[in-house]
Length: 85
Image 1 (cartoon, rainbow, N blue to C red):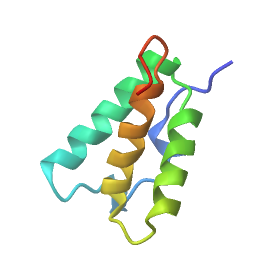
Image 2 (cartoon, rainbow, N blue to C red):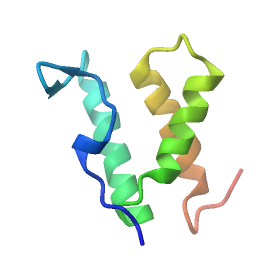
Image 3 (tube, rainbow, N blue to C red):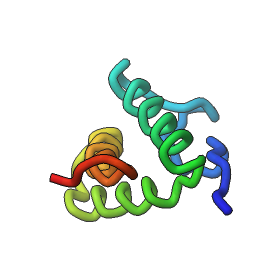
């Protein structure tokens, strides 16, 4: 059974308890990832979490939201029914 996505469970950058986005594209990437997690994985965030861990490990100095984007880009080709390049 999948675990529902809850923002409180994610280790996201925050300022004063609020999500911290430095640019509009960051909030867009966040929303896209949340939608993919919800619709393609039934709310199970583990596939994305594993991709994010790999993206951060691959380039530890990369800004967080750029790693988030890389994780999403790596996850999308793996969606059920999508051709893998």
